[in-house]
Structure formats: C-alpha cells, structure tokens
Length: 153
Image (tube, rainbow, N blue to C red; front, top):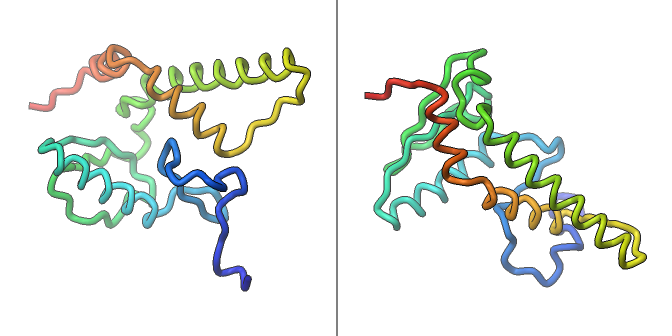
C-alpha cells in the first residue's frame, strides 16, 4: 500500500452494514466534504420520505459552502451563540452522553463478571452510540426546542 488507500478498522471486517454513518480523517475533525456528503445523503432520505426539515448549524468552517438541498433548509446560528441557541446544546448532547456512558459501564461490568478484560473497539463504540441516540426521547428533544423560546413564524 502506498498510504493513499485506507483499510477499514479490523473490527469492521465482515460487517457490511455499520450501525452509524462512518467517515474518518487524519485529525478526526468534521470537514466540509464529510458534512456535505452526510447532508446530501440525508437530503435524499428526506426526499424519499417526502419530508422537509429545518436544521440549525453553528458557524464552524465545516458548515461553509454547502450544496443546494431540496429537502433541508440550513439555519446558520450567529457566532458565539451556539451554546444558547443550538437545541443540541440545551440538553440533547448531555442526555446522549449519559446513555452512552451507561452502555460503556454495562459492557465493563459484564466483561468483569465474565472474567474478561473490558475492551471497546470502534464498532462497539458505534453500537453504543446508536443505542444511546435512540434512547434520547422525543420528549427530551421537544423540550430542548421549547427551552429556546424561538419565534420561527
């Protein structure tokens, strides 16, 4: 290999369908390309479902120069306001982290009970993340939007 081609992590071997979308780069940062590709895929899903959505994004450089989207409208939050205006920052992320940590603790306890050394690879972490995300309730998400008191009329 010349280094230009990257193999998937070994833990993905044999898994054709991953529990979450997976992209990587050297610095583990969100990039314009990764975000744009993700948005295009989400736009296609929304189009297939005949749904239109509104998405709040911060002013991160990865969110610049986005493609035209037929079923997603992006609302860019002003600089230095994300912690106050982004619904994700109003409790959704914290709730997700609590559920994720519960999965990690369950895994560690089960490993110890089975006399095994607890190990978590990327695929297992993805499974924990998916389970944690689906544990965040619609009520939690709705309440985070209500707490913003936005006037979107």
